[in-house]
Structures are given as C-alpha cells and as structure tokens.
Image (cartoon, rainbow, N blue to C red):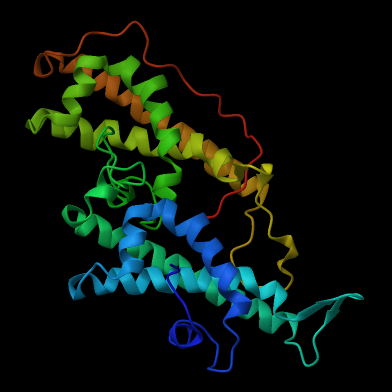
Length: 311
C-alpha cells in the first residue's frame, strides 16, 4: 500500500489544488519513497508508517516522511507537468508555466525535501529506542565504530552545516582515514580505548587531536566522492548547469574546491602530527600506546577534480 493515496492528502503538502489528478504523480511518489526515503529509514519503519502503526507520539516523524515523499515525488513529476505526450510526439501544454516559475517550484521542492529529511533523521536519533529496526540497520546515523559518531559532533571540528546527510556521505572517507592514518599512528590498542574509555586523558586526546584530524581528513578524502554517483546507470558527475535560471546552489568553482580540499588535507596532516608529538611527550598517560614505526604518512595535497555543495 502506498504512503499517499489521493489528492486530498497532497493538498497540505504540495502546491496543488483539489482538482489535481493524483494518478499523474502516483508513480513518481512511489519512486521517491523507494529511491530516497526507504534507504534512509528502512523498509520496516516505512511499512509501519504506511500501515499507521505509529501513534500520535510519532506524528512529527510521519508528517515529515509524507512531506519528503510528496516533495521529492513532485520534483520528479515537474518536468512532465508542462508537456503532453501523444502519437504525434511531445508538445507543450497550453498556458504551461514559464521555465522560471517551474524552476521556483523545483527549488521549493528540493528545499522542503531536504529539510524534512534532516528532521526525519534527527527524530530517529532522538527516539532511537522506539525504532530498533533502524538502529540495527546500515541506515543508522550514529557511527559507534568511529571517534566522531554524529553530525552534531562533526560540526564542532569542521563546518558541514550540521547536515546528517553530508555526515553520512563522509562515512566511507572517515573509515579510510582510520585505516590509513589514525590506526597506524595510534596502534590498535589505543584506538579501541578511544572508542570506549571515559578517562580524562583519553577525552583530551580525542577532543584536541583525533577528532579534528578525522574531520578534516574526512572532508579531504570525501570531496571527490561527493561529486560522483555510482549506481546502475554507471558513474555520474553532479552538474546542474541545465537548471537555467533556477536559483539554487551551483556547482562550486574548481579553484574553490581545490583550495578547500588542500586546506582540509593540510589541517588533517597538522592535527595528526600534533597528535603524535603529544603522545610521544605524554606516553606515560597512555600505557596502551606504543611508538609507531610510521605516523600514517602524509597525503598528496595536489588538487583533483571534484564538485561539492554543503547544504
């Protein structure tokens, strides 16, 4: 059973009136749910929302899921709203909206969906005990195996506008930072201690050196990947030059991206070096630390091709 089933349910969520034909958008709504929302919240949680299994306590979650699906569905539908497909080909509908008007609607849908998704993830984190299916899934937004576990914690060290979606996208890059830099520099024993100990010395090491190195190196490694999408269509690169007059975030200029990447790499390298120097000078406070044969190595800070937008 779909989440939204008629026009009346769409009216509070979208710029449509009661005369809108629901069948025009129905498939687009289902595609939005399958491609974006279900991977974020799991099929089990989505199915319970559709079935009405959540009471008024979780009304805010249900409303934001509906808002995200509706906005993304309408965004998918928008290109077809002004055209007619018939035996003779594709033609524009009479009195179709101007391109700048349609672009304004697309921007509204993108912004509304993005905000709703952030609220969905924030809500699931806040009440994670009520959503064990989500907490035990790969969609879980808390990285218990990393020194930086949440977007809010990441924000203390590098500016991602508090975005959980950006934080999740940086996950693979942060895991490489652990493998290539932090574990070789710290040793496995001390690294595991960083994840579990509440000792004052461990907290200082985490706050002042490990997490800043992880955050900045994470952005350094993640920038290139966030410009690309790998899926069943192949390898695609972000490009919104076809958006015409659409007033939204544009692809960053390559020089700006290169500068950001270089700065993040240098900061990560600096924090890593400071961490090793600190440990060497205070080894007695960290008995599980053994002087490494390598500090994890420096990164290649030569600019590479990338495009990024933080929301």
